[in-house]
Length: 149
Image (cartoon, rainbow, N blue to C red; front, side, top):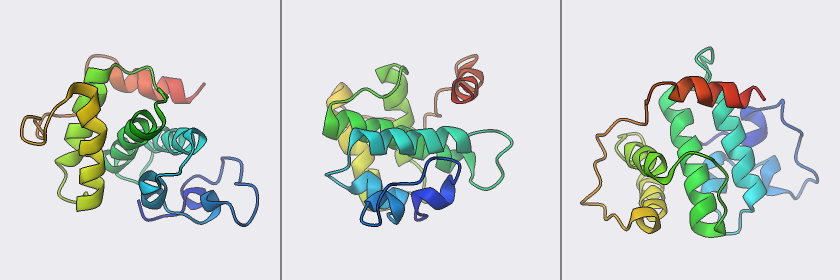
């Protein structure tokens, strides 16, 4: 999460202008930026979807999937934008699963919780962080197939 977005996915069009925060900001900084646009969250989500590919050996799938859920959650929380077709219960499960990783820093864990709360009114104490990310039949196939489109 501490890598600038263009370094993670150079195949995406480069950000325009040297003052554009997308040119140098890390994924973590962009997720925590209260002024980030919906396009930024869409870009982060697109990068995460590419990194979830089973053939990717540069970023652990757990990290890529956590970034994916966080980008979707931030778009909903801060921008009121729905940038995915996954149902809210799957998003809640994914955000809760993200919170359960020891390598997620406290501010990012809190961000995931803030994204969760309006979705289902769940508190930190009532959400099961140990529950695995959605793995319904075909979930990974649909996710990886949709990124190829």
